[in-house]
Image 1 (cartoon, rainbow, N blue to C red):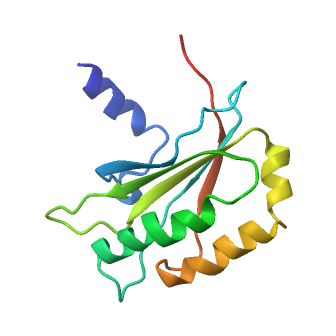
Image 2 (cartoon, helix red, strand yellow; image 1 turned 135 degrees about the vertical axis):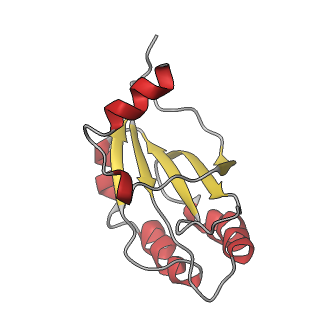
Length: 141
């Protein structure tokens, strides 16, 4: 019953024809604590370059790219969610999530050389134009 209620409620704010669902495996790159007070979490939807298969793109992401991205100043936690292969190929290859202590830290990184290096590495395995969402962490007790 709860699932049926949830699915009915989704129709109030989601377009089911444009919704994506992935089954993912979590790969923790930086196992830091979520910042006190929740901090800010950045979630990005990523798609692999079309000339790379899913395994090759994800391997590059969790080795080469992770080592570059892990140097971004103020990065508290970094988790990659790798899409698992299934009977239907998913457009997304995964969802990286990064946590920072504040929106000020996120803004300060916009001009950092470490972020510039990270962004310069992305064409090695990703399609351009990465959509992202900033959210504030909170815990429901």
